[in-house]
Amino acid sequence: MQISMKLELKDTPGQLLAALKPISDIGGNIITIIHQRDPNSSENTLTVDVVLELAETKLDTLVATLRERGCGVVRIGKERLLQKQSLIMIGHLMHTDISDTVDQIDRTGYAEVSELHMVMPAINEPSTAKITIRAVCPEDMRRAVSILHDVSKKKDILVLEPLEGVE
Image (tube, rainbow, N blue to C red; front, top):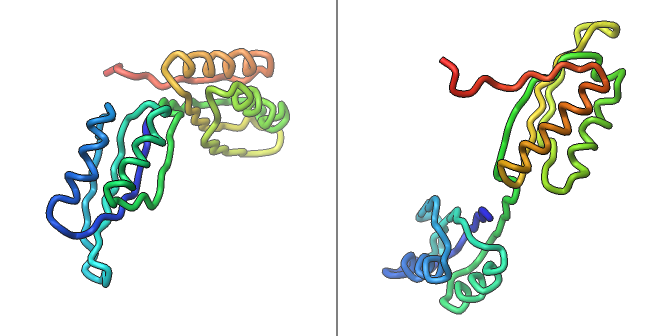
């Protein structure tokens, strides 16, 4: 699972290493580190934003270890829907209940619609929408897109997938 953390550290030598070593020790993979000093801080602290990959079962242990080492854990964000794909839908989207189409993906528990941008030229004309789906893994994304295709076929909606890797 991808996790973002905002840490508050004392602005003294060795504190960044003290915050990052437990991540490595527990088997986490650091993706990004942003280390900033706040010149206006009267408490002589700095913030560090870390994005890492870590098994969710190890998160509580990591947080406890960081706190034991004097690192303040200000924020934790979990991102479980790591796959993202956008598709185009063309048809009478409102007349065929777009919320039902979205609900059928959202109900799966492994995927959800994260964005929907629609253009409706006239009440009796077909609409166009860009739908963005997020899923846990590539297989779940394939399953969610398959659901979208099945629902769209029943509602006479055309779904266009991006042409990836075509020059």
